[in-house]
Length: 538
Image (cartoon, rainbow, N blue to C red):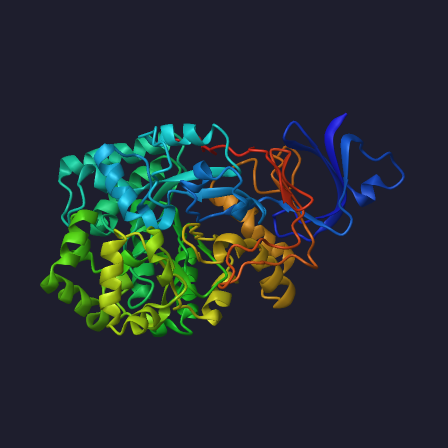
């Protein structure tokens, strides 16, 4: 007897093809047979130890979150319902050029401080790893969902060069190449950059190109958060396309948005740029989240010169009145490179989380609202908050445009990524609602995508980018990472006011053939593991 048969499901297989009705049989963690309704007519139907009636439900591959910030959350929270309840069965970590491997003790301290707003301080985590392989081994002890990893270029630069704004020496570049190669050899699927975040932002294109050549040699891909999503966004996209062409490296554009007032209605220009690149033979994909607001750390808005030297130097500059005034001028008048070259509008910056409990009154208010309550200038509030909370505050940036969101998600190389930051008292709802929001709002209610095409963007297409040969499709022999959802009711429950509300209409989620969500409730199963892609050098 097989382990499980899922009966009478409407199978949407992840290829974009039309759905079909079938019984799907699972055994030993894999799909062992698919019996379509026409083939089953007049013959004995498959039997198993357990039978699940899927009448009225869609069976699809598990969703792949191409841009996740669960690097510590997977270790901290075994439940991890934020993603499991959405139907996510695989997350790609190590994003935006900053994560926790490879490191030494000195580098780890700086990284933890710089991205505390993404992942928390880490005080509750035993950092018993230093290399990429050791971090993946830690994940293999058992996590809620599967995870792949990108070598974070900013962390590599911090480890070798430090947090200074300067070119790497030839010896330093050689060491960075070796570290990237080692990460790929140990199972990483590619390399990420955060080119508005220190210290990765200090890398010149020649340096990035050399590292991308290493990535290409190992069969990986490059995933940049590029140098601007605001003023100069199109130039920044073009820069990454050209860099990847020079390196011969596949390119995946992270959270490919067109934000701020300067980019309203300009998505067609980005898509034309991508179409030209694809027509010339470029290997390019992208991911987006289905929301208009962005999310990052408050410190990320600071100009690059103010971030040089790392977190301790940032705090020193903020406490010096003259230097702080220069920072304010760059932010409010000039347009900081950390804020994508656009003068900051404090009405659009909402505090979503803080590290110190005593600062909770800021959360859920814009900077301007908080400042008005205190009768002070917005920059005074921001400066105090950054210093008192040791750079930990996270923010929402309400700077997007719905027409751009819809246009980009229609593009043929689009995939889904939550960019979900799980920290803070009031996180972005995308962390809890991205995938059901795609299916409920943009498929069922708005018709922006067909169901089959949307599922392909959340499953088969990401698996192809990750070069995972046995995931992302409902196909015999593939791993049984599966989702059953009701297309009539699936919806994101999370909102900006109630961001941790669970989704509706996703009663079953399986990883490796084991139920991690059953009857709409999270089980105690920890079926997730590190997903290592075996590299092919040369």
